[in-house]
Amino acid sequence: MAIYETPILIVGGGGFGLATSIFLSNLGVESLLIERHAKPSPMPKARYLNQRTMEIFRQHGLADSVYGRAVPIRNMSTTRWVTSLGGDGPHDRKMLFEMETFGGGSLWTHYRDNSPCESAIYPQVRLEPLLRDHASDMRTSRMFFSHSLVAIEQHTDGVTARVEDRNTGEMHTVHARYLVAADGGKTVGPMVGAVLEGTPELMDMVTVYFRADLSAYLDNDDSFAYWMANPGGDTGSWSSGVLGKLGPTRFDRHSEEWMFHFSFSSNDPARFEEQSLVPRMRDLMKIPDLEPEVLSIGHWIVQGVLADRYRFGNVFLGGDAAHRHTPTTGLGLNSAIQDAHNLAWKLALVVKGRAGDALLDTYETERRPAAQRNVDWALFTFSNHQLTGAAIGLVPGDAQRSRSNFEALLADTPDGESRRHRFREVMKLHNTEYQANDLEIGVQYESGALVPDGTPQTPRDPTGRRYVPTTRPGARLPHAWLERDGQAVSTHDLVPRDGFVLIAARRGSPWESAAREAAEAFGVRIEVVTVADDATVRDQRHGWRRIREISDDGALLVRPDQIIAWRSIGAHARAADELKAVLRSVLRETEATA
Image (cartoon, rainbow, N blue to C red; front, side, top):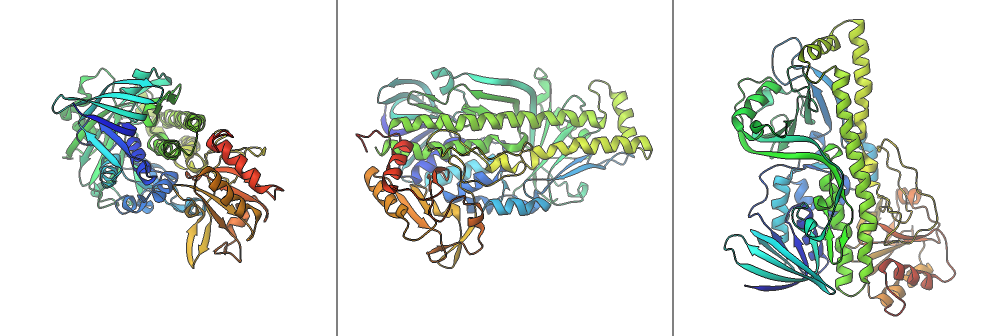
């Protein structure tokens, strides 16, 4: 039996666990990750990486690796609803509706102006190996695969875990200061008594991950998904099914790999049988001679649940262990990456003795409300798909009426035009799923590791589409392009991943010396950046001036996770004292320890 000592034990090697390991390593903190499986999941799982996730990956040196392999924005800029891909009937191979998605097409200007990063399609089946490779190259990160958590015991100064090597059956002991549950809620949550609240089961889904050449049935290169609806399909599901593009080397209609989702009854034994799934795919797509190479088959539950707590003593839940989403709007994995980003810098400061343990309470204070909004939004956008079938005229359990309504929808008659108009109006609701820019980058924490300035929250777009930049404490630092040493840099590039940044608007501002004094007092890194015409960093395009919401005498303090911790709109008579009080509050330090 071996005994291991580590500041942070991470249980689970999926997206959240691996990201946490990498972020901690970049912050100079050792961790030990255990994962019960020897290899990553063979299923695509989540595939949409939104702008906020790519911003985080950019800060931690991962974005270029992802972009170099991912489906680019031009090939994921639309979603289509079609009757089928094949077939030669009068209603086959018809496009019912097309919607711009994820910052493509006419959406591009708004998305581009608000972030230095594009969204991307990169499925977990490829993302997780990339993250594993990246983490394994870091000296402060240890990873044990084929190892399972058996038991944990908490005490005042940490956690003792019993871990089994699944290859040998040997038991090991791990002593850790903190434990991060990244296991999808399979082991740690039940051990600590976490309760998942919400909607536990909406639908039983099956995914077929396969390789095939579908180019002969497609007439466009820019759709990332094709929803199919026809009266011969399963009228009790979302639609007949949805086909998704995966690459990995061709991202147009010649994509080599695909995934296909459809629903089954949870007690139907055929839901895992390739011999029944492939014929069903052929029928739904109306490609009778399709001979796909099936790579894997997966089963998953559509749900929307949230853990009642994120912290249990020295144990922290994140990712699917803390929240599980319907796949609509793609918020699950993206929320998990933000969990890791939020938690890692706080763990790093506490482990290094530069912040009080109470700083870790703010992880739940901030991330749980954000996850609640995302879970609710995903459920809301999922419900829109139930309206789609009704707008088409599909009647669950009544194939004859469904066929009659479907034919009426496509008929060249006044009634048909009215039906199509109604259908198009209903389909506009899906912009809350595919154009939710504010949901993706507009996070606003109301309390936590921040100092509110008493200003009201920026109004949110009820459709989730339009993000409005703000520097109100608790918000993500707005993006603007600046110039430093002749090179274009984002405001995000001003934020060190291992420290704070104070952004001033005038050279020689009292805030500059105040920041240096506060940094020395608390032993934390605070970069001081002045953005001014006569400074090293200049706002040549005046984009920052338009959104900074501070005067030339004001300042912003931004956390390592690019969230604004504090704002002074104007000057302060005692700048150094003010900034020390702010830092003490953010770090949850007492007067005696500062």
